[in-house]
Length: 60
Ligand code: FES
Image 1 (cartoon, protein in one colour):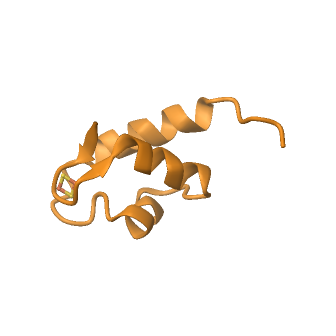
Image 2 (cartoon, protein in one colour):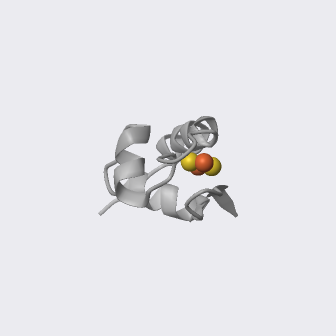
Image 3 (cartoon, helix red, strand yellow):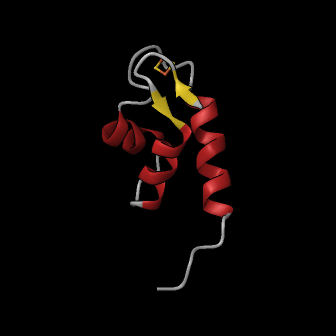
């Protein structure tokens, strides 16, 4: 499902960016482009980032 319609970024791309180390919406934007045009999706990006951060990470 798309989170950012301006750039066509999916929720999975945001999750991947967070799991790769992005901790701010700016960093997610730098990695994916999400939130870099109109900014209306930033609340959804933040919610997705918070949900991703609460997910248990697999042991490596
Ligand atoms: Fe994401 Fe516009 S919907 S920048």
